[in-house]
Length: 197
Image (cartoon, rainbow, N blue to C red):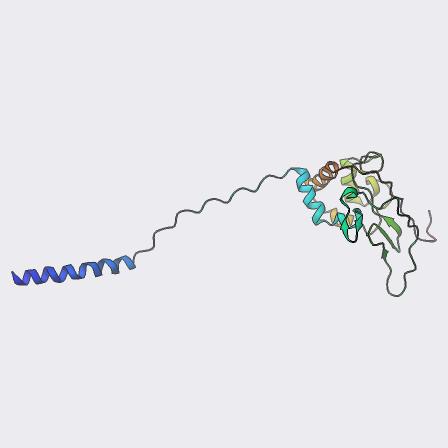
């Protein structure tokens, strides 16, 4: 009987140790499944277009600036008509391209080009004349003004935008149609000296 009690006492002493050891060898309990990530909010075409205009650098040339900061009241209205620039100062040395402090007028071997008014102004912007969504897409694809006119001048990188899909180009158009119109008549480009007109 004494032997039996010792055996029970001995077993009862090892049971907690055995349970602890067996617990160590068990795989950890599975973590609860992670919540599905929240779906990204759906952007309207104009919201998507705003992002594309920003990352595409459109403000760099098409928005007048004051000490490098975009003038919000004339955002994307192109070269200010009040700022008359018809010929660059002499560019010497290895430099072949010139620009003003707002980056709205450029000169180079192509002549002088002025950043266009791409606001929806009905007289001087993208709602004037023959501009339409289709004409805008054609202009970006062909490098032709209004899709069929004169060549779009440098530094406008239409040859980079031509690879955007129609949905993205339509989104840019939607954004440009959603911003405040600004009346600003931008001069036509000036061909280089000696060029045939």
